[in-house]
Amino acid sequence: MPIPWRMIGILLLAAGAFAAAWQFQEWRYGRQLAEQARLNAEVLNQQNSVAAIARQAEQDKRLALEQRLATSEQTHYRALSDAQRDQDRLRDRLATADVRLSVLLDASDVAPGCNMPASTGAGGVDHAAVRARLDPAHAQRIVAITDTGDRGLIALQACQAYVRALAPEHFE
Image 1 (cartoon, one colour):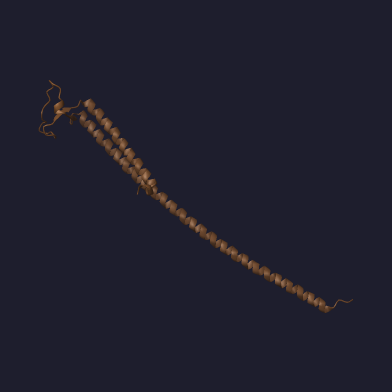
Image 2 (tube, rainbow, N blue to C red):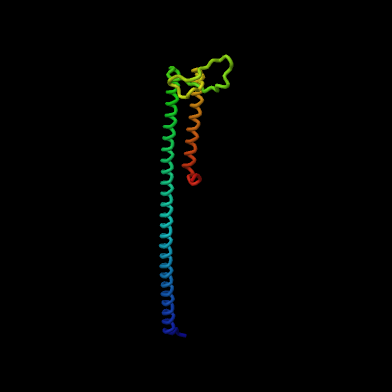
């Protein structure tokens, strides 16, 4: 039986249509994949931009915190240096008898036979108060104690400023 040419033509035409449809589907899916890839790239670029902005914001906050801490450290170092200089000056003045430390005494509690002056001299601060001068060595020890206390208070203020700088929202 001979093969009819029409049948071959129809089969070839059907195969060509099938190949064309296949090609069209491949082109359509390729275009969809390309569009999806482009959208994914845009989303990725947006995410990278957001991450870069967030990273820059964190760097700016860290830099601002470092600057505040440096300023605070300089302030407290200056306060400590000033306190040390004042203490040194007071110690020198005590050592050279330029200044004498004295204490107020309760006039009603003076031991019998102890004659204390009833008033201060012309340069005195208190009016008619009984005062006693401290031994220079004791005065030096008192100054050393106050120096240690001043240093402790300045260090405490520095620690408080550091904590406030790290967590400002807790102290507002």
